[in-house]
Image (cartoon, rainbow, N blue to C red):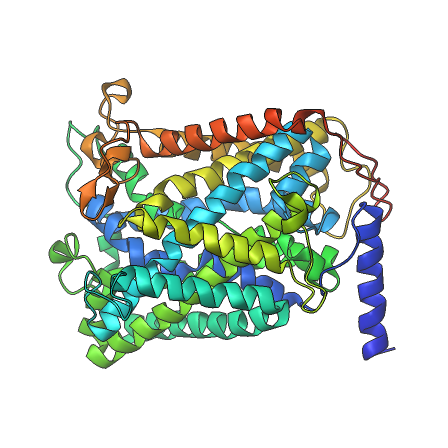
Length: 526
């Protein structure tokens, strides 16, 4: 049988799976594999990350920083494989929050979701703030100048406009989000591959041996090249995450137990392949590698040198599209996390955020809330992009917490019965590798310039984990902020607020009613 009946049958099976998990199906289920994959691919957004961060990789590590990309793709693949199995069992809005609370412990699950929520919100802020940066490159706009609304400068004005539009799209309907996102992903993939292939064919200025050259800043003061490479790899670390988004859109995806894990793995592997080819092409097309080490826009320089200024302008338009749909996807994923925690009454004003708009069948209230909260930093600091430093580290921490909880469940025999995607006897091994990888990267995020860590990066650590004192407002430093590392300061603030809320409101005494997963025969593990 084909046509509407097949669609209805698949949706009915998906909804039955949700009910077996104790969840009432309310969101509109209309996404296929391509749309599910696309939202995860947009969250990762290789174009956005390479455009904003390649100067860090080249400037610190030289062309040899390229090797950080395959290293991080491999490391994050361990995490993605674990998440693919989880998304096959539990294709539920809220992804790692839901997986943690169902398989480990309600407290670990709640704090996993709490950290991940704030990481998502702040990432929305940082990426929305990147939109006007790209616009400035296209239109020659002075971001510090007064905008059409004189009390905002151009950076804040266009970032707020971005958030208003992405909020409307996220609230209006998942199909509209998917259509816009799919167009953006198509443009991003096609654009990156076209630029890469043409550059590799006609625009090469460097030999492959350049991939072994460093920036020459590894000294006894930095501790040699390993600490330098660990800092240069932040270009890649700041890009390759968010693949679990395919799982968090599971309640809106047809045949979710099969398509969500496919979306998770396709997003990271296609991003990895396209990113590797694109970075290779840019490095080999760089006309003057010594000058590139201090160039603030080495990609644009390489494209213009190899293909001309017209292609350089086209590249900026591709980046603008990519950054916009990246904002859209991250806000969509964070909205569904807020909705999921609100539905469980695990967020302040939970019933409000857990509400589904009866007309659009979307978590519209949560979408508006994420948009409003993400806009707040633009009224406090003129350096919102710095917030991504702490946010990205929080995401890796949240992933680690989720994987830790899942390992506890595996030690108790989970999964007793496989879903569509299963790791089988490799599950525990891959889970442990994901934890080892995640733990090493958390240490890398947490290091800062201090005698405590010797020469492991020295002053270069100001790029990756600076002091809170560098945050400015109106060009002036916020004097009340303590001189502590950005990453640790962010964790401390979110943890303290979370502890107060969690225990003051009795969240620790509440028991969620979580049904057995009848679709796969799993009983509750936690």
